[in-house]
Image (cartoon, rainbow, N blue to C red; front, side, top):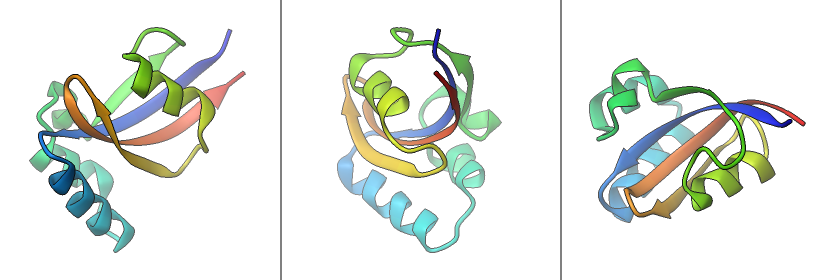
Length: 93
């Protein structure tokens, strides 16, 4: 069964997510930004979500984690919780 580890930053608006993505692309530290900006409790640990399998996250999040490139920051991804920047840190098939 597939498993993945990922970290994310959750914010309220697409503009916030796009601004943070620009900072990350400019060399800012993902974990540091998550600690300051993410409205998810995981922000306090740099956005780390640990290991999980398919179906454990909301569908939009799940699709990115199990289909898109590992080691790249994806987003903004909209879910019912807000807008996410997602970095897949590992995945096994």
